[in-house]
Image 1 (cartoon, rainbow, N blue to C red):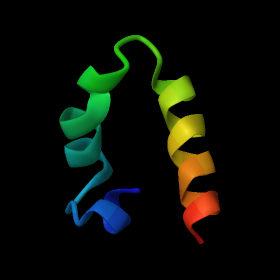
Image 2: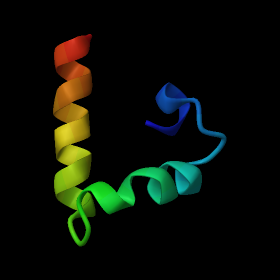
Image 3: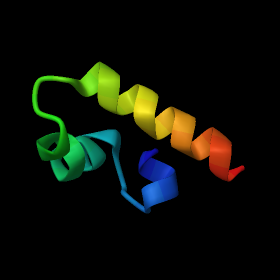
Length: 40
């Protein structure tokens, strides 16, 4: 995800997007993963 978003690190991605689903990083990862597979 970090590379796809153009971020230099996974930490930068986490800091950028973690506010979207506070307390639910696993759910956020699943949603992003599903979205990326649909876009492929």
